[in-house]
Structure formats: structure tokens, C-alpha cells
Amino acid sequence: MDSTASTRPEGPPVWTVERIRALGAVTDIATVGEIFGLSRSSAYELARRDRLPAPVLRVGSRYRVSVAAILAALGVPNEPPSPPTT
Image (cartoon, rainbow, N blue to C red; front, side, top):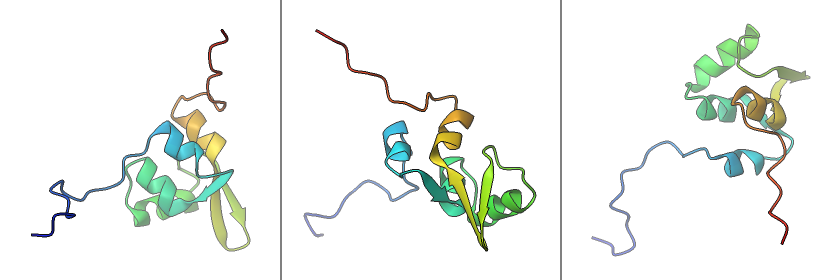
């Protein structure tokens, strides 16, 4: 066995608040599906029916979702907390 191989089973990525914020201003439907624990096809179906937990922006033939809207749907403040002042 390769010593660099991980013994941890591969699974879906863990979406932390920091990782979601790092996506930028908007993201695609497949990523939104991962964040909310949906399959890709379910996420697209919900987007077509305007039933995703966050509003969908239609840009031409593409769907995009605001990262701020994802955070709001998760109940997370849009801005990261300020570091304590000393």
C-alpha cells in the first residue's frame, strides 16, 4: 500500500462556513446541491421549480445562486465575525 494513500473513506466534501464563503459571490446548482445534501438532479429539478432553499439567478441558460443567499438560508450571518480588539 502506498504510504501516501489515505485510510479515510472518500465521501462528499464537508461544507464549512469558511468553505462556502470561499466560493465567491455566486456558485452553480451542483455545488448548492452538495451544500444542502441534494443530488445534482434533485438540485436542478428544485431550481427549475423555484424550490431551492436559496433564490436562483438565471443567467442565460445557466443557473447561479448567491453565496450570501446560501448563508442566509443556513442561518449564518453574511459577514464573518470581526476579530476581537485588544
